[in-house]
Amino acid sequence: MKNLMMRLVREEKGQGLAEYGLILVFVALAVIVGLTAVGTNLNTLFSNIAGRLVAPQ
View (tube, rainbow, N blue to C red):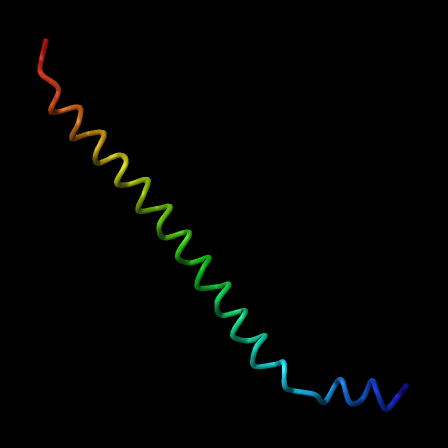
């Protein structure tokens, strides 16, 4: 049992895959946050433009 645990601790085959997974998660979070901020700003911009285009009554 001790040999099995020591072998698992030394094993590095899955380490690269885990690192790529973490990088992918961080990139996805950055994209989501960025698109949310840009989307909110675009919504405000288009609302302002639409308000100016409405014919005065």
